[in-house]
Amino acid sequence: MAQASSKTVEIVAPKPSLTPCVLDDDPAQLEMLSAVIADMGYEAIPTSDPEEALKLVKSGQCRLVLADVHMPGMDGYEFLDRATRCDPGVHAILMTGDYTLDSALEAIRRGASDFLPKPIDRARLRRSLDDVAALYDQRRRVRALEEQLLKDLEFHGIVGKGPAMLEVFDFARKVARRYANVLLVGPTGTGKELVARAIHKLSPVSQQKMAICNCSAMVDTLLESQLFGHVRGAFTGATDTRPGLFEYANGGTVFLDEVGETSLPMQAKLLRVIQNREIQRVGSPEVRHIDVRLIAATNRDLRAEVLAGHFREDLFYRLSSIQIRLPSLTERLEDIPLLVQFFLRKYNTAYGKNIFGLTRRAQTVLLRHAWPGNVRELENVISSACITTTGDFIDLADFPEQLQHRSASALETKDWKPLSLEEVQKVHIQRVLEMCQGNRLRAAQFLGIERTSLYRYLKRDGADTTKEKSGGAAACGSREENPCLREVRIPCRECQFVCRRGSVPTRNRFPH
Image (cartoon, rainbow, N blue to C red; front, side):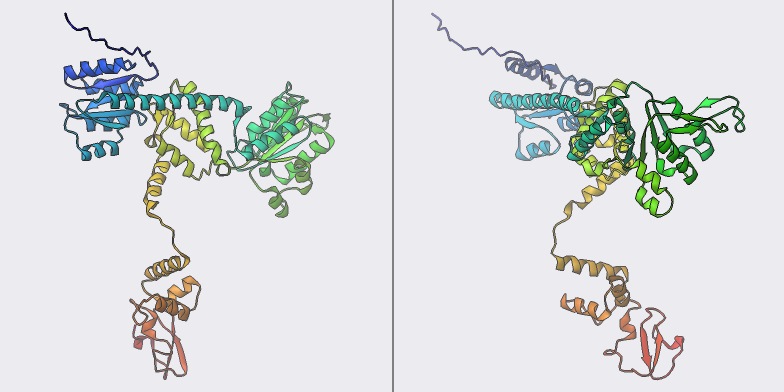
């Protein structure tokens, strides 16, 4: 009678969150690995064509690939390099029959998640698959939480979670309830217009119109017509009567961007609007009463402009009774990941893409950049990267050229190490001496010290103070080195050191 062997079969529900791709040129190995992975609860896609596996990686169907190292045409290492270029976030597990420690280290160095010897140890394979699946699910949950956090921290199109921006949001909510003028100050690209729109939406007159005018884009005559309107025949080209922005937004809000660029005569007319709530169309003597809320914005220091006589002091105090300062992006670096997620969602919808995020090195570059253009510059970078990228993650190569070069220069400074003040002083003096080609008088002038003090520094550090390179002060000599010290002082042609001689020599007789 045949002995019946009882075998416990573990029924595992498939894990659709991760779909591995098995790449091997041996059909028997391919079938065996696919069956083993299926028993572990994963739906594998088997293939013996590396190009087909790369297409699966590019399309995002497979985020994990198990590839054999020894394959004809394209080996495992080459496949790993190409796969990571297609999708920097892909996980790759290499397999080989001739396992060595050096080959394992080489695979990990190139970006492999694991390096398994053949025949495959099922327990180790399960552990590797489960680790990648757990990481993949964790990233998916984090992404979902970030989406929810983004919704919670979005303030009428403005995103921020740092203390500086939360204070701006809170102040804007308080100010919006009162029908008062507001001055927004901050560098270009920080979102002053977005804050102005948010204040209008939260105000009691949110149902009324909001007019926007860029004061720096027009000359005075056109700006006056734009703001106050004009009557027919008021100037050349005025073929009909038109109301200005103040009349258009009567009962609502007028936003004057770059108000610091206006001229003094225009400032006087704006002051009259604020004080008397009345305007006159260009070419008309009729006075019209209006009721608008004025929100002004500038990237200039208006206090300094007042002191310089470029801005009216009375208008400044009228505008700045309520002032909101918007921080630059370098003051709110903690908001960059949230802003990136916001712009990714925006441009995924605009361009019909499904980009999940940025690679780690791309995130590092964004955090190290100075951002002179602030949030607007960051938005432009993410917008262009969404257009150029072909994978699910934005990598360094998708960024503009200046950001890539900045990354390379940052990597070159990795050998920096902390030094004591004495060592920093010594290195700096040596560099200045090299710049001056060994001329210690010039080096002392650059360093802002006396030449004798420089000699003491060099002597203390063990440097030779008796010799100098071409044209140095030693050629002229100091009092100790030059015994011929008499009455006449003539500046040296090369180093301008004052030498003393017994008689008046000509410049041709100088040792230089």
